[in-house]
Amino acid sequence: MSTILIGVSGGSGSGKTTLIKCIQNMVKNKDDIEIISYDSYYYCLNELNDEEKLNYNYDHPDSLDSNLLYNNLCHLINNKKCFEPIYNFKTCLRENNRELIPKPILIVEGNLLFFEKKIRDLFDVKIFIDIDANIRLIRRINRDINERGYNYDETLFRYENSVKSMHDLMIEPTKKYADIILQSTYNEIILKMIVSYIESNI
Image (cartoon, rainbow, N blue to C red; front, side, top):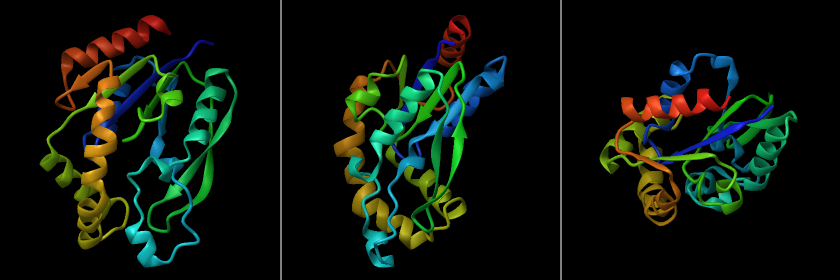
């Protein structure tokens, strides 16, 4: 089985998950798609206290187990099963694993997805979502409070102390590697092109 590997990157709150859902909804056979999040590959912070966890820079490449993601993608491309961590952002621990099964379409999303060359070079299509910083901040606040169990002060503290600076330094520059740059989450023409490419290559 041949595999199409699509990478979706962009800053925190840019709409990566929403874009992937749009693609998934437009593809005829949704069972052909496996979605992988780079956020699942954060390292455990079990040796840090609560204050150290609050100050931990989640937006630096060193916070992510890029070797594990790379190995998992290589396994899937070669039609081998593997396991992805399930990360709990409240406890900052990997609490379980889920089995990843090889499928014709692998869509991977992550802020720093295009930072590591060895990972970047695996993708057949690289998409970067370039959204205004104010919109991204509002979306991040809503996500962190409603989905990750952080309070407003924690979310704003992280944004001011690492998220914004790391976006400018580490994430924004990787836009140059993208095949497609989107200024909005939903671009019907581009989405139809992506889905057409996927379905013509399955």
